[in-house]
Image (tube, rainbow over all chains, first blue to last red; front, side, top):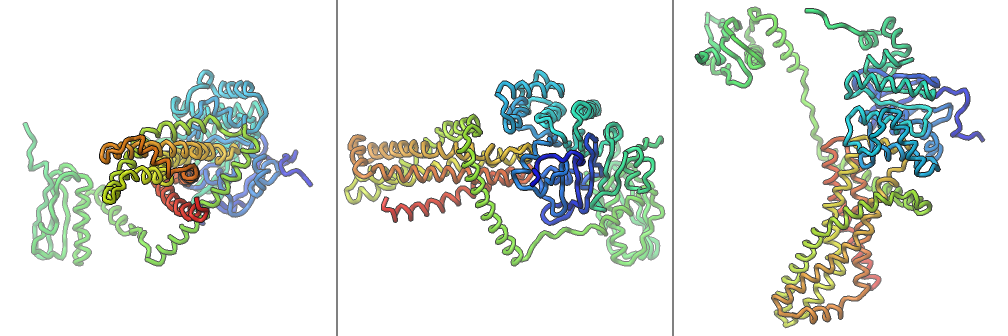
Length: 260
Length: 375
């Protein structure tokens, strides 16, 4: 019998097959199928309320899909038993929209918690690793600060450090630019690319920030509220220039404000 | 020089011409200022054609649109022709938008009939019972896992909660318990005096506090103080996606957040209840001394004739159970909270109501069980 938690060597990082997502009987997305290659920077884009975050929540197991499946490295995740799900959870990290830092813990303790949960490292090693992760996202010197004492951009970076604590193979980002100024947002994009360059991490980002989409996405999938599913998939520039679907070209078109 | 007040008010004049009339609007039309009433302006006239002009309007906002829309509606109802050709293009467009939004706006009826309400309430009650039993089961399994691996228990969080729900609750528990003892003593004294059994006030207070009031009053205080705080904290964490973050990392929420809190209450409740018993007795003793002139030594000796260890044990057992109930209700409601500020508030209220309801039910069950056991 094969081990249901060991990644298959040639399998893509993520396979989503005919996924149906919804809340309390209401279907938000149906028949969503995606394949995300290892090391890819993949964006899930679309207008507000189209189900981007819903898809992400179903992919990472925060909500159970009503139909379809999610596989990580060829191994089933959404339909897996609790033990193998838990084992697979350590293969990915997630940066939430608000950072979602645990407010009662310092930044170092936030990053250290996943390490304490999944490793047998000594307390000192855990602390050193947590300090290193924080330094990698530019938060050296803020280790003993509480989340309430730092800015929104710093919270996101601390959230990223926590997501990277276990050196995951996949990192999910839910609206990383939300609430950030353009400069901080650009820095976060650079950080995302750096993570991919350094560790070959697969990156999945939910966003509607055109600047981020065009600067760092390898491939995008576009969701639509009316269609309740995927309406386009491909490289962002190609979709912007060649898509015949007006919903896609309208979303991705970079229009200058008309002069009066 | 002050502005002409005539120019600052909204004005409308009606010029009748056979079965037609022209409504000429003038002045400043602002939503925050009064505007003419169309019906009053029209009076007894009943034109077949209404022409609208706004040439003399100095400044306008939505107030003008509402007035024009009112005229349009009147024309539609009476079958008169409303001529808006003389209005500027901008006003005509906004007027058309207002008419369109009026047509398409359908009031959302949230009311439900009696049978639906009863059905939904029943479904909700079943779902709540399921949620409570599921949560109790999850906590039991989590506690077993922690018993196997105590190093995983968040002792620091637990100690901090103990301080919050135990030491920090001492002042309010002291006051309430002392006053309960005083109240019981005053009430008891009325009857006991009639029969000359003043000294038995010690028995009454001792037994009431130790078996019932100490645990119950402490539980009521902690349900309002600590249960609500648990629900608000966890509800807020849920709204901030902190609970989701724990789930994604694979850290069991029950183990990390719930069990330290429940354990803290389970330990501190009996200690607080014993403390409440002592304070209640002190209250009774003060009344006995002041009102009935019973010396504290006599009071104490009399109390010891009736209160034994089994009475104290029943109170302590109840207190432990009440502590667990308050912790479970607070944490459950917090984890069920909607992701909004109002949701957190509702969770806190619901935690208190659930805890009080379960406390009363549990107290009744204890009364029956202790009676059967002869304790």
